[in-house]
Image 1: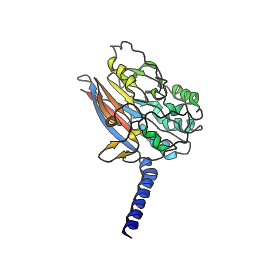
Image 2: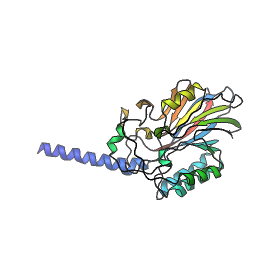
Image 3: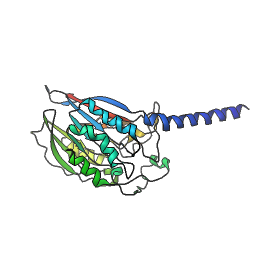
Image 4: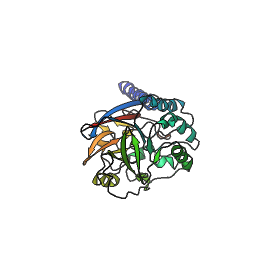
Length: 290
């Protein structure tokens, strides 16, 4: 009898945790505020809104409204680090969410889920770094790209560019998604006339981060990890889904001579719609003098 009671309690607890992870926490959107001491002495603060891993579907109206309302923060700059889509018909929904933010300077890179749709797979495979990448059905990438570029945002997929934000000249260097081998990073001297040098990537792979740091970038923004998505309290992320250490699965870290901010992202892959001890997030980074 005691064993049956214990077994029933364990099963009940497991079902409760699963329900919480799939129905509550993954929809518990949060705004994380982070201070980054990266500007020169005497500089006024610069506010950067970092959005990543929306994994948007057409029917996620609450998520679309939540992202749109971020415009009330009035950031100086918006950076989107990829994986915006999770459905072949999701481009209008993603652009609708971003639309109020188009009034601010912005830049973006893509992740694998801006190119390929979701594929049903064993969720435990997420814990294996050496698992084979399986491409899903193609997504309307060019439609998404056209929408973002026509709104005035700068594309940084294997590209460099400049923006004026918060009264500062900012040099940005980005790569296409390293997770699926689309990155092509070319070292080049930075423009010393710029007030700030930013790196942008979807997956924070060291093979991309290291040369960015060597080139002297001040701050690198990335996503992809989902913060681990399923974390263990007092232990942290089980995996980063890349070569970055688990302790750097989310948040602000020192990486060599640069700062690295990894967003835990706002969505989940449709085939694994759970989060535990790792709520979905968007970050507002306040850059201040070091």
